[in-house]
Image (cartoon, rainbow, N blue to C red; front, side, top):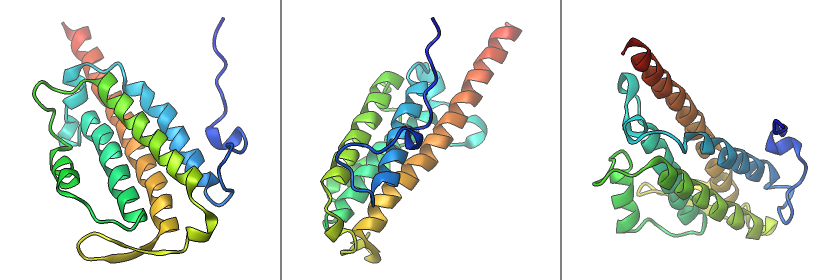
Length: 178
């Protein structure tokens, strides 16, 4: 029996425990969580391929983890530590041995789960609290940072899915020629 395709997360109704102010960002993050699962079966070569010089699928998965961590650090009023900066520098590297798709997909989904818990626990009265971003201390708010968590994750999820389709099609094409 074929499984029924669910509507997008935002069309499934409110999520329990989420403020209406943060519901759109939470819906977006939950949609990304579902969509990145499509990359879980990439081979290691496909995961780290850079088609046409584009960023690898592995980079996008790692970047989702790292960017959520960094943005949420700013949202709570803190600055990045040396571990976060080291992670940022290594996001595009496969590692030794190279990370695998199931591992990176699980890490990205766990990072999204953590971000959703933070959105659930954020009081509406804190949303307009001023926050600064980066060494330049660029101005933002808790609300701006939480929204950007969703927007930025969504952007990289889209790039991940496009890269995944490209590397799969290259593999299929190469197999066809063999």
